[in-house]
Each structure stands twice: as structure tokens, then as C-alpha cells.
Image (tube, rainbow, N blue to C red; front, side, top):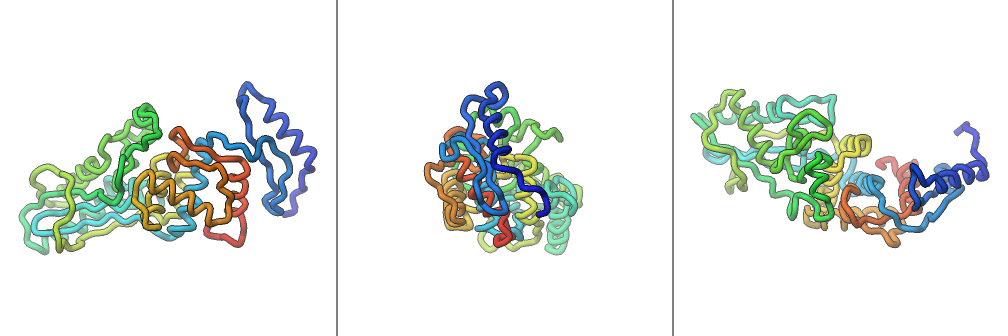
Length: 315
């Protein structure tokens, strides 16, 4: 608060230089600089024009998740037992660890080895000689890859198919932009089988997708980092997949389908409820990776003003 306030003239000078910088910035530039403390616009160019937002679209999903779902919500992965069948039920956590969870991490907070240890105790208590494993990822619906995404983006590792459960955002290696498993849910189920076997449980057959049997009892649960940390993670790393997960969770929270269409509608509705003018706004996805989204600098400024407002600490 004791920093010097820049003059509007100096800000205008920088904005003009940015708008004229075609070599690195491009020919179509939308800019709006606003004083966060007062809400006063200091300088701008094409501030009400809608542009392709790219990853600035993630700001909308962040605000929607924090305002509609809440900063303390976790995404829980559970295991249910019916007879000799263990069903792994995805709750939206695509950042599971294949081994033990790490309380210091966001990606890897919950671990399949920890879940397997709980299940192993239940299997022993039930006197079972062996179990089969199934995975239920029915929380999310519709295409796992947004229709607006270029398939090459997925092939290049910029995103994974969005499912209700995955290990390390479905990466096949430790690289940030590693190739992803084409079916993250089944890949996670196979990791869970290995974790069960390490815990001393005999697993028969091959893991497959199925809903849990009626009357199945919960025998294990692990929880993700709270949503506030998940949102921080996808903003800091610009993780497209986790942003899409949060968008779908917002949709389910508000009674819509956990699909691409449900997520984009729910995110826009949540942002509008914060008092942001959505004139001309379009979201083709929740992360900005796909083609078809349009947002204006004015909309992003209005949203940011609400996010830094002391009256909305959850944002």
C-alpha cells in the first residue's frame, strides 16, 4: 500500500508500446490495466473486444471452483467391497500417486498404496483368498477429450483424456509433457492391482470398468489436496487436464452433467454470479486449450478485481 502509484501517462505509454509490438505480441492486442485497489481503469486498447483467451480462461474455472464448490473440498477416491470384488471408485482425483501419498504435494497427495493397505485389512478380515478389481469412473460423462481440442495437443502431452480417476494426470513418464495413457481410469486400476499385490492381496483376472454391486461396502478412502491447493496447482502450472476436472466438479456441484458442456455452462454461470459482465463471452472448454472460446480484457479485469477483493477471501 505504500508503493508509489504510477501515473496514467506512464501506464498509457507502456500499453501503447505493447499494442504496437507486432513481432512478439501480434497484430491483434487487447489490453486493460486497472488499479486493483481502486478499480480505476488506467489505460487500455480494445478492452471490450473479445479475443481468443488461451490459458487466461483458467481464471474463470478457478473462480468458479472456489466460489461454487469451496476451497476446502477434497476429491476422494474410495474402494468398495462386495463379495470378492473390489471396486475402485473415482471421485475426480487425477493426481493420485501410484505408491504412498505425500502430504507435502498436491500432485500425489493421495496414494493408491495407502488405499490398498486399507483394502488389504478388509480383505483379510473377510477371510478372502483372492479378489477381482473393477474401476468405476462414471462420475464424469460425455467425451473425455473436448471436441474443441486438436487431437495433436493430446498426442503431444498438453492434456490427458479427462476421467474421474488417474495417476499423475495419466502421464506415462515423469516428464511434464509426457505421453498420456489413452484410458487413464484403467491405467489407474492396473496400478491399484499392483499396489494390492504388494500389500499381500491376491488379485485374479484383469481389471475392468464396472459399477459397484448393490450393497457394496466402503473399505478404503484417500483424499486429494483441498480444492484451494488444486486450483493453485493448475494456475501455477497451467495444467489443462486438472482445470477441466475442476470445471466438471463445478458442474456436478450445481446439478449439471459432469461433461464438457456442463462444465463450461457451470463455470460461466458461476462467474456471472460474481457480478462479472459476460457480454460476448464463450467457453469451448474450461482450460483455454481448445478452439472457440472468446473473452475480453474487460471481463478478465472485472474477474480479477473480485478475486483480489478482501471481501471475497475464498477467491
